[in-house]
Image 1 (spheres, rainbow, N blue to C red):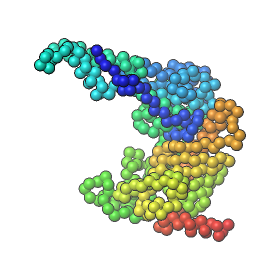
Image 2: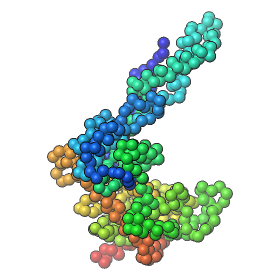
Image 3: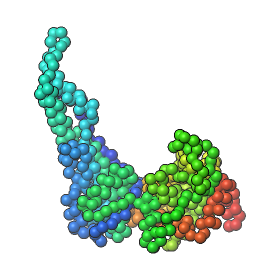
Image 4: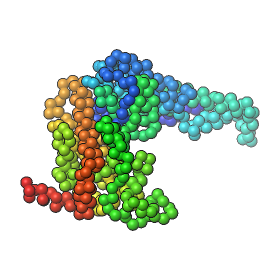
Length: 436
């Protein structure tokens, strides 16, 4: 007879959950624009669509390797949709569950070999076993496949991924920690099937185009190119084994944005925030209010010329360290920054990826008095998160206006001077204190 793994250790259900996200804990998300016949409110029809496209776990492994569907987001088994479980103000907080069921190839081969051994029967006294016929080998393969299917049906070999989703319906924006192409594709297909809407991930280039198109200024992005704040470092480009790249027009290549060249705007945005934090006390004048920004805890940098490699700094005040200032002078641009953002009477902490504008580790400020009910706590979190994202977009819009406006020549010269002085944060702080 076939044997089984002791205690079922070889096939337990595994869960991959990026945290409860919008309901509790820190928040991570990428931003998606929603277009199509989207509803104006979260009504009964929307909850019916969620129910019709809820997760059906039995589909995974039964002819397909993975299946996806909606859950409320409370936990991976909850599919009781309604305003009480996933409607919060004008937003919808649900989750996508993706079940993947696949027996590892080594286990599948072992099951087939064990079935063949059983078909052969006991070995002779000389240790020899009879040779199986073609039909017997096919039967052993079928036995192994049935065993795999039985174990999948019993919940073995199943991996469950829980992806929190927040849909800001009036803002036509969906938020989810789905930065990979595979997860984005799965979420896009599910939204199209359930709601007949299209979602498009908005990185730095996509968000810039959306903001400018809304103002009839989309053409302003056509000729924009990366800025050269330093001279090109000497050396060989790391992705080119045939010698140095030509100087071209003297602008950095920003190699990580090769797929979407205008995504460099997100990295330039981080560099601009760093400069504002160092030279202008972190004050950003947005149309609605003054926002204060500080870089803290995280600073990942990569050479924009594709020559000098990368460095990752962690700890208090990484932007003021000698390593960070030296990296600036060597032509490195920020790829990811830890930020402290203060606006609307709230303070948020987070990490922001430049080219994708993906947010991770967003900490929602806690109220002075604890919320009386869980629902009130979630509503407060959703409202704070949306307020933060509007603040982030407002800062990005302010940056775009400066980058595309007449002031950019003066700003870029000031940033070059700042980099040439290696930031000089202590001198800037002393000058600010003297003028106070």
